[in-house]
Image 1: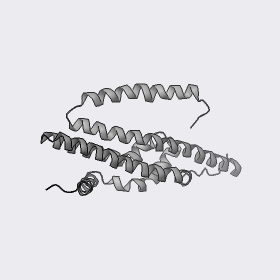
Image 2 (image 1 turned 135 degrees about the vertical axis):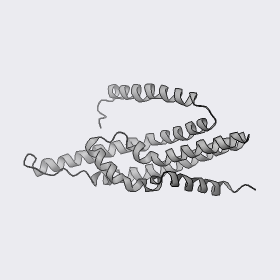
Image 3 (image 1 turned 90 degrees about the horizontal axis):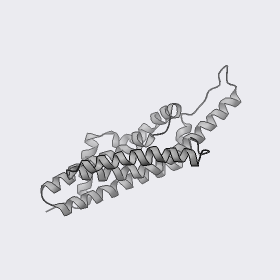
Length: 196
């Protein structure tokens, strides 16, 4: 007899953690990421930090869907893909809530412009405040688009598990060129004051 869905998901999560141990340690890694991105650019913090859990769930989805399709149990494969989607969204929404409410504190941990011979204390304080403000804005953006990343990781994983690699490739290419590149360009034209 099959185990309840919650026990199967928990067992799958344990396997994911075995392969990707940083899934659970992702929140601990934020300190180093915020430091690096504060100085070198916060643009893709979601893929490095927030996306780790969703990537693991997407890989697990690939395995589960492939297994059940191989057994001829297409209905179970569909249910597992949807369950993985709910799990990934729960993970990402939880991370987004934590990061949204702690965004300034997280950036502030590492955004300390020190006074030097060339920079007086007042200027260093202003620079630190600007870094915290801009870093907080970028974390808000990451909190929003990470949800769509989770959706992509899981359902592209499901398609790969089903043996379909053409559509994930085509959709990823099309969205990368239209939404990411085109949308970014349009935002710079339509909302030039929305700087990072």
